[in-house]
Image 1 (cartoon, rainbow, N blue to C red):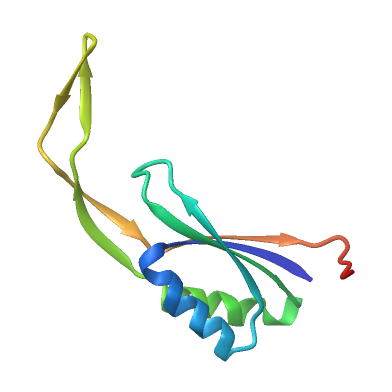
Image 2: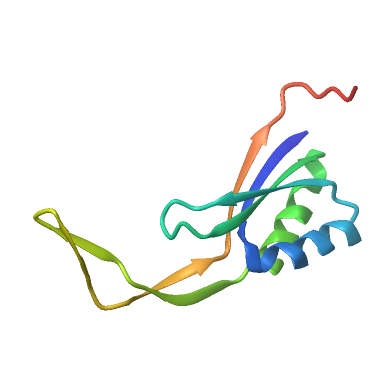
Amino acid sequence: MKLILAVVQDKDAAALSKKFIENDVRATKLATSGGFLKAGNTTFIIGIEDDRVSDVMEIIKESSHTREQYVSPSISSRGSAMMSEPVKVTVGGATVFVLPVEEFKHF
């Protein structure tokens, strides 16, 4: 058994959740926020049998999309904050961790 932690952009969470339901993948959904852009994310926690990991990874890959957006970074100069020109960054996609499960209990 494996534990999958998948962090996706909020814009992709509803479609991914629907795909999980269609494919009988049970997941716990948590609202999270990222550190870089401080934007909303959704983290899915999935306990799955080893032979289904590749299927779940494919569902996540197909449902998580990267996007480009502009951000306005603030630059600190000797104690005062200055605004610089907006910078184009790529956001979205999915960050996925697959961890071994040593023991599983359901009470």
